[in-house]
Image 1: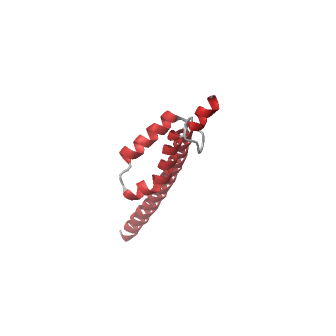
Image 2: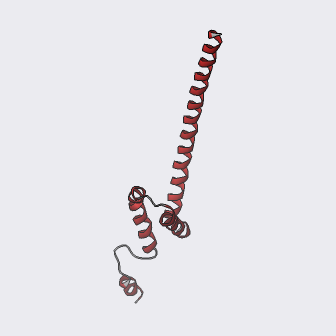
Image 3: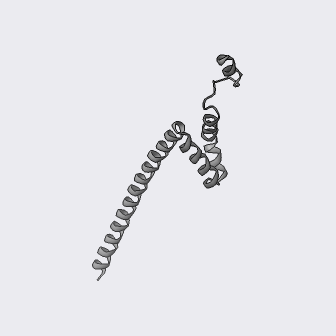
Length: 102
């Protein structure tokens, strides 16, 4: 009887190890997906004004933890700066354009 109990215990331990390994693999895949998706969204936000506005809105609405907000702050500032700079001459105040047309 002891032999059977030992065998059951060994199989249960093996099953637990396999479950742990699968869980780690699943987390690694999910992390990779998040990185790829995040990179894609950032790229889109840098290129497309509508995507940029959506990403900024989502950050403000969805990200609530202070540590996460601090981590995203440089990106948020970059995206907001891109939105303000559309059509503007870098370093210019708009008066430069008026003079060019005159």
